[in-house]
Structures are given as structure tokens and as C-alpha cells.
Length: 147
Image (tube, rainbow, N blue to C red; front, side, top):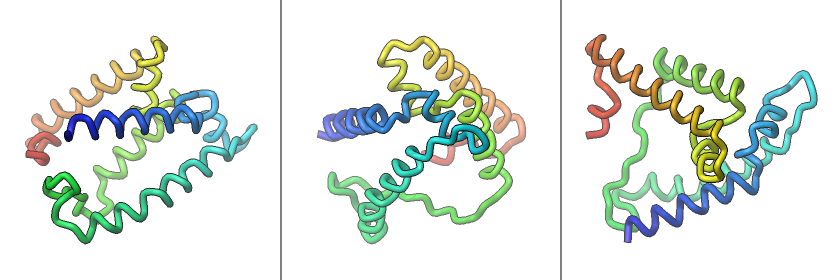
């Protein structure tokens, strides 16, 4: 049942990305181009997504278990630290250069765009490099934090 719900949620998310234009790098770059021909339509998509997500997140904060009986796992950290800011900047720079982020890249790969494969390969290499650096510096890796 969990796998079916995950599949349906992923399909709905991918369809939403396609319908909103988030899988179109040109549209995304138009949204990020504040000094040129700015396209504010993605701002409306983001505001709509936040509004739709607000109710379920409010409900989830009050629950210990999900509808499927799994332990509720919501972020507990509320501090802006260097790591979060550096990660956000890295993500934003990559989004600004490529006009695509991980979700739309998977949608693009499924649609047969080879550029999405290059993006995902580079993203995976960056994740591997991050893990190697984390182990080298002795900080806990993301995998250690999840388990």
C-alpha cells in the first residue's frame, strides 16, 4: 500500500510540475530573470503550493503517526547555520544556471531530455563529493542523520 501511495504521489507531483511549467528551464530562467523579461507566473505556483501544503503540515505537527501508521518525521531544526545557508546558495546558483532542480530533472529524464540526465549525473556527483568531504572532516553524514 505504501508503494502504491508513493507512486501516486510521485505521479501527481510530476504532473503538477509539468502543468505549472516548472519542468521547462526557459520558464524557470524567465522567473529568475528579475532585470529582464521577468515571468512572475511561477511565483503564483509557489504561493499556491505553500497554501495547499499549509493545512496538511499543520495537521502533521499535531500527530505522532501518519495515516499509514508510520512515525511522523518532521524537521526539528529551526536554526539558520552556515551549512544550511551554504547549501541553499549552492542550490540556488545551480537552479539559476541550469533553470532546473531535482524534481523537474527527473520529470525531464522521463520525458527523454538528455540534458536532464547530465544535470542528474552532476547532482549525484555533488552529493557523493559532499559525503566524502563530510567523512573527511569527521562531521556526521546525511545517511548517519537519517538512520
